[in-house]
Length: 86
Image (cartoon, rainbow, N blue to C red; front, top):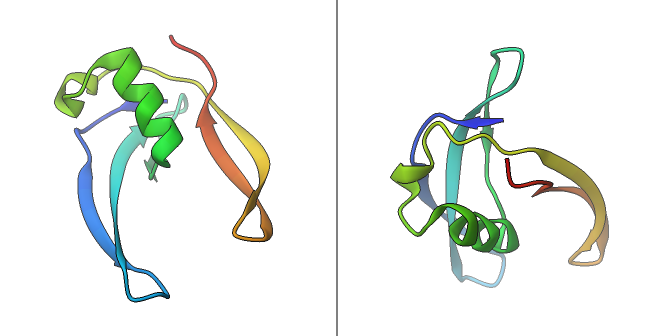
């Protein structure tokens, strides 16, 4: 998938009255379709390590993603992580 933008930050309200900041990236699939990806903290850390702190520098970078079954707050969910460093 290819980064098409530097990401858009949004705040969501959690059940415990706290807020959480998310970053949503527009990504292009190999077939040309566009999707929004909201990476978790682990994925963001990986991206910063690979491409640097400024997400505007990520535009045009290509990454491979993998889907993993993971326990998220007591429920098994499919989680998307970067799979390689293309």
